Image (cartoon, rainbow, N blue to C red):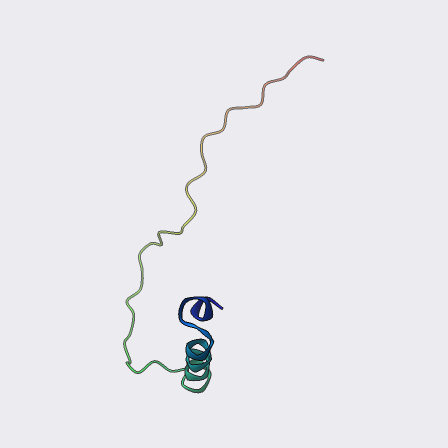
Length: 55
């Protein structure tokens, strides 16, 4: 849908056909293993104990 919004329906259909019928990329590269991910969740923040509020 994004390609269609940017470049039009005919381009989107061509892109879809290319991806469906030629799913392998033209290059063969081995990606290195990552040590970390920028999308890893942050460490949990220090939480203060809940205060007891008398009724």
